[in-house]
Length: 211
Image 1: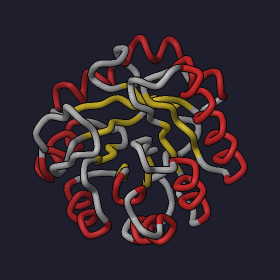
Image 2 (image 1 turned 90 degrees about the vertical axis):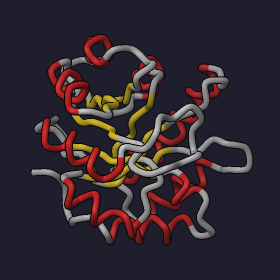
Image 3 (image 1 turned 45 degrees about the vertical axis):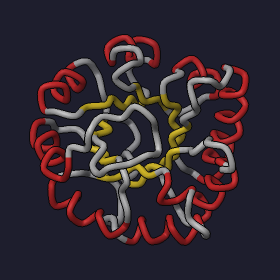
Image 4 (image 1 turned 180 degrees about the vertical axis):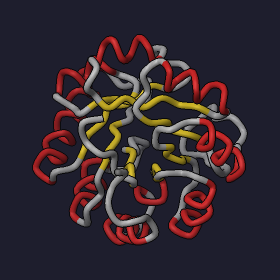
């Protein structure tokens, strides 16, 4: 990666009653380094583009990294730094071909074998989880726990970003297991004060970026 990967990834929450743009603004105001734009499957490409374009502009102004999940054409269209693909999206190798050799590309993994394959195919980092039980996204598999995060981290040499009901209190155990950073949704979007929630998460993470 040309740019070091930030340790805290704020993932947009587009469920009814949530305001992803307001939450991202709050997170960026206290130094969130990475925002992942994730939209529900039912959203049109136009709606995804408009949200991603807005958030990419906010990230650019703040000096943060913007990634777009799943919809790589939207990532390219808005000039995002890269994207992230899950188990049901394009394979990592195909995603790398689309984004090019220099973009940040995340892949999802739950076990060492899948993790090694994703890295060999071109993943810059891995999103690993769910670490703990979560209801943020439907259809998720059972949590793999801290031990599962550690098993993946030990198998690869790229940053492992733990996701799934991550809180500031749980970060030390995840870091001890080998996680490089964390991705959060509800811990911030569901907080009464998203900026303060992000500040607490950042305080639990090491200062600075990888390398």
